[in-house]
Image (cartoon, rainbow, N blue to C red; front, side, top):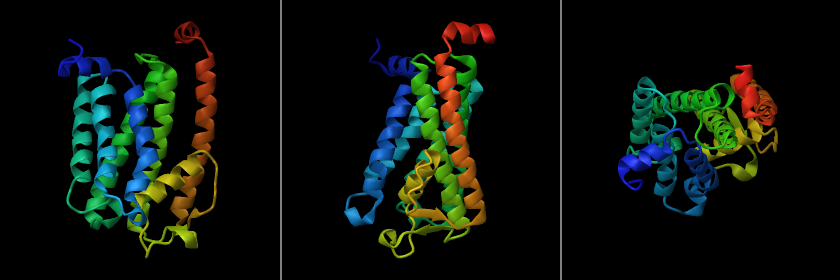
Amino acid sequence: NPWTIRGIYTYLQGRSLPMMVSLFLLLLFYPLFEDPANELPSWPARILFSIIPVMGVLSLHTRRWSLYFIMGLGAIVFVMEWLPFGMLDKRPGAVIWVESITGIVFFCFCTALIIRSVFIRDDLKDHPVYGGITAYLLLGITFALIYSLINAVDPGSFHLHDSLQREGILPWGDLLYFSFATLTTLGYGDVTPVNSFARALSVVQATAGVLYVAVLIAQLVISPAARKQAR
């Protein structure tokens, strides 16, 4: 029966589309619910962020060790998101450290699994375009978590335009916005890195974003048969 828990799990395993959808929902709505100016509850933003590790556990693992690894990291990310400290920018420094580092490792591992499936193994059940887009979105979120860790270590690592100032608070949604503006090389300039390491990392991210798109397009135009023959 496909509508049982086991049936849903079997269907999701090896598919990147569910995670891609959850990532797009996070990008669209997380900043909306996180911004105090909107006077909206923060729990929908937490739910959106919590869906991602759940989708990672259900769909991305390929072997038993990777399942246990993703489950462990995903559980920590999920629990840390629901600790009673409020949103990420309002939490104690130690909590931000643990959550950021765990999230970085989790998203890096998920990105590596999808990139391997798209560029090396070609073993996704759905179209490789979904996997390529999912990995691209994961890259942006991973860098946003790294930027949040940098800002936790060195507050003031990022300068916000006067219209974005919020009493010294830098919401994670702004770092998410900056990360994708950098990844896509838009560079609006309303959020700029001041810390030298953050500046260097933004250069690496922009370069990776350009190269990733070029390599992904080159990979997708090659027929599956030609990719298998090349391997």
